[in-house]
Length: 293
Image (cartoon, rainbow, N blue to C red; front, side):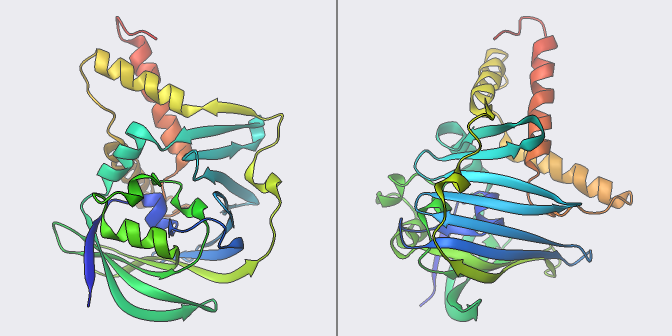
């Protein structure tokens, strides 16, 4: 029997593949590749999982690597800025978590019960569709038994409440990681594919899940709170993260249409661009009369 629930999972959870899991079940590295139908470019990504912590390394070309660290207990995400010996930290709790959920609340997940074997692991195929247009958006194949770090975006306490969707409760009990994700465009054609090519089970050092002690932490959550306060002071209401992401994607599409090659990150949110937008918003607030901190 097929089961369908509304899904409110942020893009980083669906596109980068982690869904949910129990702590302590897996320790090791998942190697992934990403390909796009409209370009010959391929990129590599590695997920390091250990207990409630995770690390993602993604190749950006020309020898560059983007590094992010996640903590499921504190529900924080950190992004490395090695050139400045610093890192940015974002909180996914509270209002930020609500915005992430709202951005994807119009999607539906269907567990089909069909299974495949990928990289030696059995996985179940899930269908992700648009709730209003009933358009297929992606297929993901979810394997069980991976680390708690995959749920960095979710409140673990909420997942056990009866008001939460059935998919969240079941995944929290089963554990899961989407070892293949296929995205589709509006015409129903495959636009992007992410797939695990190998899984190494091994012990990981704690140093992988923390940036060097002499690096400076830039707390972006504090800046976001100041921005929200200034907007409310001017009657502009809450921050609209989904609109920010939509505008960002439109600019990326325009650049590609002008002949600029698609970046290795493809359809993934470019965190550096998000930071640029946040900085621009701060500048606009500062030059307006009666703006304050």
